[in-house]
Length: 270
Figure (tube, rainbow, N blue to C red):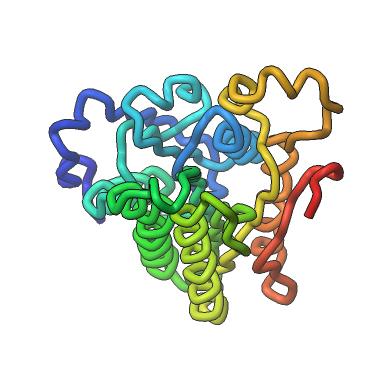
């Protein structure tokens, strides 16, 4: 197994890379890719509460400071579009949980809204890179580490969850780039599920249809949210419970697994 010194962490990230060495359990590790102050924060705290070794990444340097007390491994400034970053992150996290990565959640959003004539080649490519290409790199690396586990318990046993959106299912006006990227991520998750299910890896795709409560959403819609019922936006802690439920299906056995789940507020028109 690679040592931390041999990971070749890019020098540009060395000042922001933080490792908290205390191991909190023997349940294995839960790694959240794209951990913001909404759902990402709730996911980290939910798996931490259950006793999992927790790790998280965020592309923005300094973007994980708000989570530092909940993390055993912090991959601050890591870009999931960069294969070198992804490989280094998984190698280090694998070491942190003694080769037992149990859960990987791909939670990168990349939601952009532009009319087709204002959607430049770069905007289209960047959206696809963030929401689809990075999902491929993360999913592939997660599967590689899970399949390398020793034969007992069942080799490869683990859960990979991709966070989707309404755009995963349909294209909407001014969301061409986002719809293509999220639709591609959904197809990736389906292919991985069919290939990896027989190898004991549970791959799920969660369609989140609605706004998830976060500081960004509160600021973006500050003039509307206070006038609406409390349950008009999605509680991220409730979403985290659903993700934990998916992983508990994996833990309990392999006779009843959910591939796709959709979550929305009761007020959402769908």
